[in-house]
Length: 314
Image 1 (cartoon, one colour):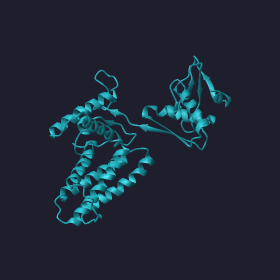
Image 2 (tube, helix red, strand yellow):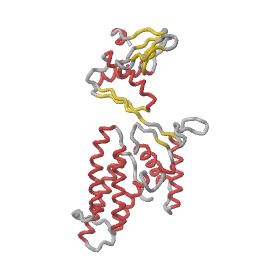
Image 3 (cartoon, rainbow, N blue to C red):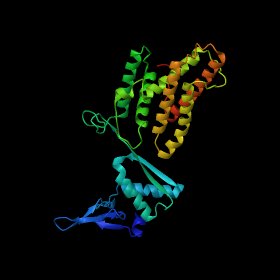
Image 4 (cartoon, rainbow, N blue to C red):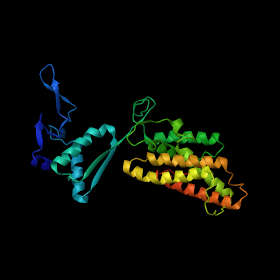
């Protein structure tokens, strides 16, 4: 607070302290109202840093936090990840920090807007009573759905497997969206064992493991690309490798999710058209084995980045 006052940035407004942070173009006069007052186009309101009773606000503590971090760490970039309702707040905080010198001119202050998880009515996901839904309740819903799916497929529906599938579905359903995009929490869509879902990706890895187990641990050999299906797998792997850089640049994991799904789909097409287990040509079979191991490796690496575990059976 002292830094801001010493810079002459704070002014009193109805007993409170505020900092004017509107920039040129934001307070553009657009005419006069009937009472003679000037109207403005989208003015950026001042940042309130102290209430009239002397109490501090979130803006005050966020500004102080940036000051503390810069004293201790000398950071080149600071990122905040919250939902879009905080956009104006961080715009105001960042501008105060820049105007006061709390944040050096060379430092990047970035607000990464996170989309919200909504119900089918398009509004933030709530319980019937209007309360915020607890994470443990969402996980319980997904676990129950996973057990239902496993049972219908004739698989063992134990708690550990159901937890992996349910949590995997939740994470993938969230991360496949661009980070700033709102999305609808649709349990049936999230838990589908086909399509762009976590369970589908987990199932593809389980299927690869099953094939390799039936081949009694054969090592494989040189990968020889001789079909369109194999070429599509290699192209999907190249795309997957490139997606990491895109995710870092965009601060969003949706590119990785989409590329991972493309690789899983390419493998599914290959699996449907090539009988790896009963391939009579040993050279070709060894090539298939190595290709499957490569696909599994790339999928597990990507799933690990997404913090999604793969069960032994599905």
